[in-house]
Length: 364
Image 1 (cartoon, one colour):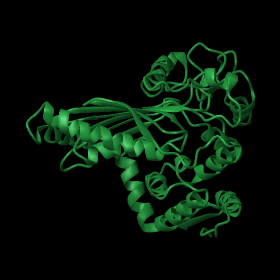
Image 2 (cartoon, helix red, strand yellow; image 1 turned 120 degrees about the horizontal axis):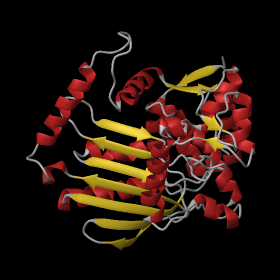
Image 3 (cartoon, helix red, strand yellow; image 1 turned 180 degrees about the horizontal axis):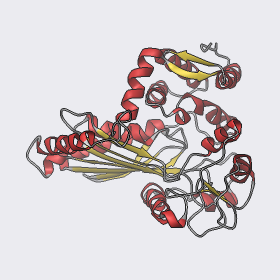
Image 4 (tube, one colour; image 1 turned 90 degrees about the horizontal axis):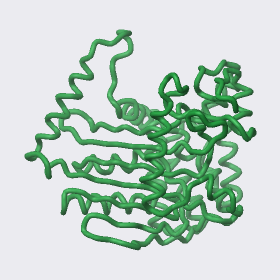
């Protein structure tokens, strides 16, 4: 087991802010980005929080990330808007976009905002939760940079992990919060199985002939190095309805990428130079349930539905039935109390980022 340290959330926040500030990001953009990243780590989504600093540093050093980005509105009417992220990190324009969608929804019942010319924006669930915290229903999707997911019946990867997040407010229960990739599993999980010497479940990774790969080392090599084969859409195999995950992944791209005018990864990589921006697109919708129901009726009905789900008899008495958002809430409470787990390998990589930025490393 790799050595692990527990780091207080505020220490992680201070470390992120010091690095982003040293890179020259504007103060408010630093604050927004650090907030999203820390909340993502607290919710247990370790792949999209402080660990992303290495990837952001690489983009910065290649020159494709605009650290002085000033997102701006390109088009707007009472219920919609289109933002240009100015080739900066995706967190600040995404916070701005959902705030704008929320304001429009409160005024008109619905608000829809798209973002283009962006980079990685962290966990989609953060922005959907902004809507539910404001008493609104939120829907978020995004295009992606990485191409690693093989469409049903295909031999080569074409899509990314294209996320979908959905949130809805309740009253006595915590908000419903679904945050999912449209791939069966993340690439890093394949790597973990390889490191642990465990066989992959059939349907996580396919080879170029559409056959499941269960050897984790071969699966990792296929995902990372081979031109054919890769991760599967949600469902895993055609027999397990992978066409549904494939369709959801494309839906996420249509809303996040096509609607905003952002790029489609397989097309972009044909001509993109290392210094060119990622041009990722995001989609944000906020919907006011009071436009449809009397005040509080939506939340009461959702509470009743959530109560029924929680009361469903579990197959294993030690593993009660959960509702989307429950695991993240439990993780947040535990990590606020005990700290965010930072593996020694990650801390070593982050120390290198700090050294390049010329800031003290606050991590153990």
